[in-house]
Length: 179
Image (cartoon, rainbow, N blue to C red; front, top):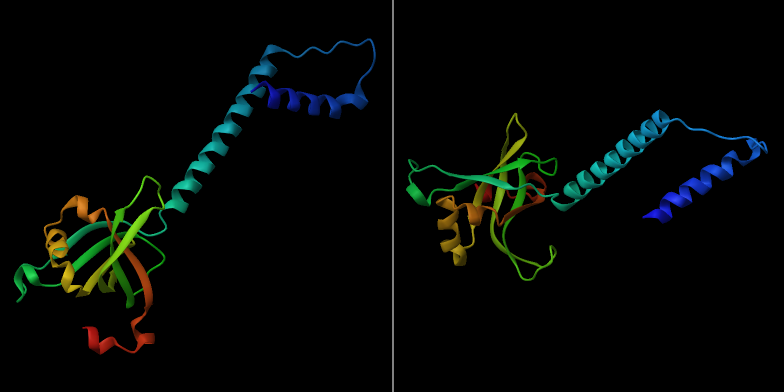
């Protein structure tokens, strides 16, 4: 730790060298040392905070699934379409197709994840708060057990759901076929 401090001190002395007058003494008051230390401390805390925020934002570009809604009074009852509520995201727009994945960690690393496609949906609404509502229009039939757990709003399962944007429904030309 003393290496960077001594390097900084040497740099400052090199800059102040031309103003050095022999046989003079330099005195720095304790107050200035404390003020300098506080300024350095604030700069280090600010830099650390910026690094922490950047790491947090770069980790989770995709929004988390907050909740799952099922209209129990719809004609299909508990088998009616699921609406997923996601955190705020600028990745999604109205009528965009999305793919719904269930993720499982295959190892200790953050990037060691297996994603399994479990459905396709459509961005139904973007709320005034910025949260995104996804209407799931196609559920993979071989994942019906997983969809039942999602309908029951199991927190552990919802935490492992990832929703990724696809192309616009209008561009795909399939608006009438999925609704």
